[in-house]
Image 1 (cartoon, one colour):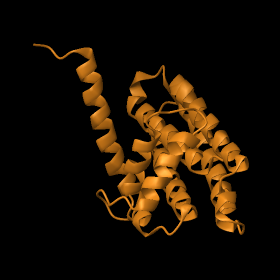
Image 2 (tube, rainbow, N blue to C red):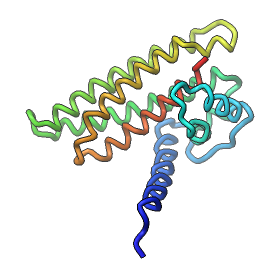
Image 3 (cartoon, rainbow, N blue to C red):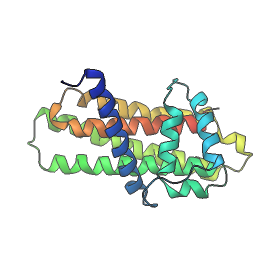
Image 4 (spheres, rainbow, N blue to C red):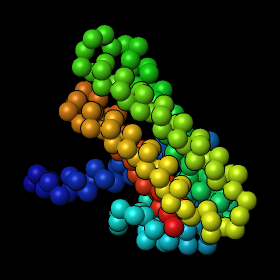
Length: 201
């Protein structure tokens, strides 16, 4: 009996999540595998589900899965530490994806639609890295009480990153030849959502 469309979707989602955990752990460089979720991580992820302003019901699960993939989350002492882990995971994934795009551009014919699209994504990813670095610096430099780390200003920085990721995605969606890149871009979008949720007031 042939599998139903729903079964195929569920199976694909499971494979996607497993691949994400593996690649995120590798990008973080902080030990592979799934690490124990501390009380701090659990509480931060529960709060993230309600703080994310775009209402994504999977935010808590994705938050736990992402932070547990990085050993540094088990050593985090407060929300600020977790925010820094999350943004570093995002930066690692953007850098990896950007490198792949640059490599693809070296081997693609000039003047073609794929080259135009990939060139736009290259600019988008470079901008996202710049935004992430400023966002990271704001968290590191903050000297006030912990609650102040949840701010609309930080959310706006992540909004800029989200816009760039979505812009690249809108270009890639009609290019079956770069399907793998579409999946990676979707991963970036999920990580941007997570970072937004962890700082949303």
